[in-house]
Length: 347
Image 1: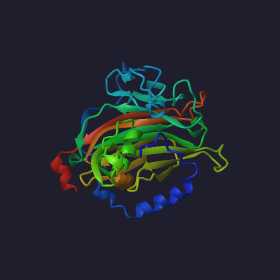
Image 2 (image 1 turned 90 degrees about the horizontal axis):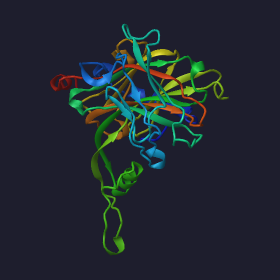
Image 3 (image 1 turned 60 degrees about the vertical axis):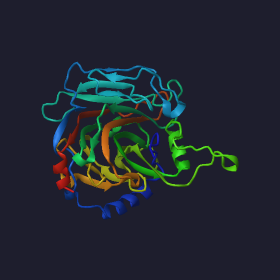
């Protein structure tokens, strides 16, 4: 469900059909909560305006998802809002920079994220890997319709890592009830590096068998956006282009969102409503999101979202020891929420 990295190079045609079918049955965007609605939650986000903002890299980075090694201590920001992922490590370059032209009015600082060695430190995999940049979050019930908004600067296509692949992700950490058999839960726990929670020991012939009865647990999952680059160096594409990939639909499948026809600043957002749905929005520029910017609404993995607790960014590279990722710049990333009674009235 939470794979180390999307690779959609051979699935573009099929996914185009998926998005076309998915959007037909979506509820009206006006029935949703537009990201940014309500009050901004202080300390759950950043505008990077502090000229003394810094990030401590504690290399070598963690790579638990590949070799089970968490290399403490983890990286962290000077304002204690951002930190390295114990699972996948931190971008190799985390640096406050001047806000690129066309950014939010009055913004003087933004955050550059870039990586080269996205796999196991010192051991290039020559495969797509990713690093994470995590917000230190807080639990918010979907009864408050939490949402997250971020401005992302897409550099000119000639500055992107020249491979057809996913390059960047904006994702949320949410929780909801999932139902699986004991065998499925054991596989799930092992993939996360956890001791299986539901393993049973039985006597005689049945010792060690796992039942097929359904068991429901509240677990974390990670819906969001990815940006996939389609390189003109790839014979399938005549020119450089990019596309949003959305994670995920009710069956847990990623699907194509809008084509990206212009670089520069984009505004991305996600909202989480009392009906358990996740709503995805995007628009070019830095203006506030509107109902017209709605892309899709889903119950990812067939799971009703019950609470939101964080958001984070993925920075991807080919992990070949020499090729740097696309330089990604983010700004004005914030969580918003509404009073529970107000959110309920919008259902």
